[in-house]
Length: 328
Image (cartoon, rainbow, N blue to C red):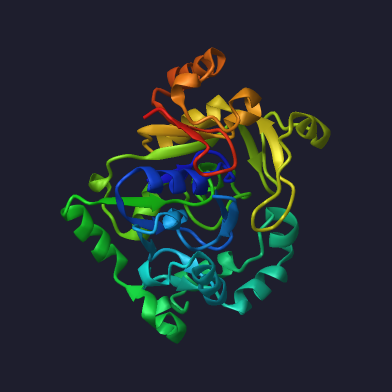
């Protein structure tokens, strides 16, 4: 499992894509909804994915969209076309479908537009309809008929056969409806336990939970952010970013060990991946060989490992998926 350890934007997509290229994964499953964008830069091309699993970069990996996910049909079909994964992607028959009316309802809510900072993609309203048991599901959509499957059944069969399954969580631990900075959170739980439930895999079947952190913390929209920097200071450090889905500037703060510790606990993390290490240590940009890792970077990694009590298995050193140092 791969989950975010801060407020989203940690680089989960690039970590999932890297693991898909490096490990023998049979099935990769995306959770969440279209309000979360995962960016994958591979061989000079950039994809901003909102439904398709980031593991699509490996053509031998089967892909799935979980029962607990929410999809928008037009956006999903376009992504399938853009990624060329039509023959190997399945959508769980129970996945929810976001309609235009959901987005319209959100845009008319002053609470969502001015207070919570919703992405206004219709996700929260679709969740409301799911709870009311009136939401349309993937099995009800003719355009999705060729993609449907019982994904939970398939995933558990693969695990029975000792084949590797990867679950890609979305957003970040502290955007969780239950464990995050309420009310400035998303409309679902975003911890590992919740994503297992979305897929339909029992907790005893999990081998590894990788929490993804970034070398600094960002969040989009309102809510607490300890140590927040001014836009000018973030720009000076080269840490200015914009949301994948909304295009809004991300607020920025330095790496937060206390938040990282809590994320490790909430997700029962077995390992950590840290992205954008080149933003802290420019000398490692594009580095892929662990033997060439500078001493100061090794010292910083050891400090993080000591504080979190789990190993750091991967460092992101650039935008490209393969710009990474694997320590696992």
